[in-house]
Image 1 (cartoon, rainbow, N blue to C red):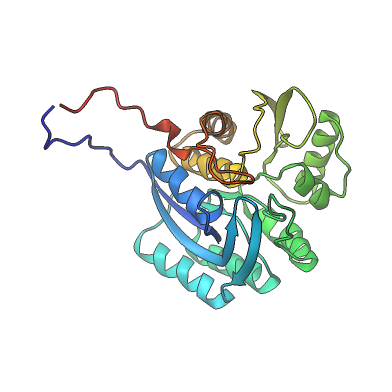
Image 2: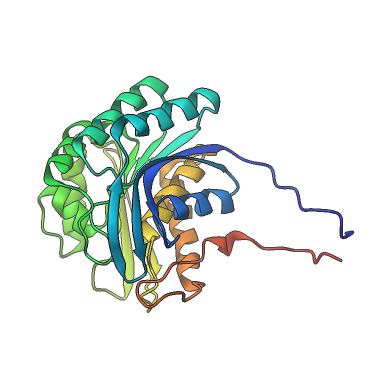
Length: 278
């Protein structure tokens, strides 16, 4: 291969990401774009908030006006229609309602919701009224919701201490209108991490090795974006979850160890160059 030749990668699908920005690059829109790109798809964005943060925590959150968020979603989709949508941080009732209105207009069926509620450092990113609107209106609109255990506890009003509790909470989310649920088990104290996928017809458990590291910033954002990407390319939701979990595990195990707090993971772990450029 000559120096002037490049490896050409064909774009597999188009993903619209509706989420907040993370100035440190480990989570939020930045992590979403890296994930979608590294998995071979095209990322578009509608930014819901701009945060000032690093690996030690969140310093400030500046919300984007609801009307501007809707304009981003609708104007972008009018020109480049997404194959799937990933939704992350929605910080207020007007924002959730505006996103719902925009989703009704653009009519995309494949939607993954990561119900971002609390940052790694403990800062609350969504208010109680927003949580209620999310449960009553948005939950039934999406294809899959991907809460971690603390988020699943809030949404289902269920204390989760065991895998059986995870299943109970997932069933409660189905009763609220969710079509499919993936509860992430990373917060449970155990040697293996168990993630539970559930809908009205099936249940699946995904077991993963627990990595002894604090560098897990952005894992939820990354996982939901990876699921959206695989799902947009024709994989089933169950298979998309399995493949996305595998991708995140590799990203954690090969993390760059940046920062003094909860560092980022390695979104580039999918890039394997088989032939050396000569």
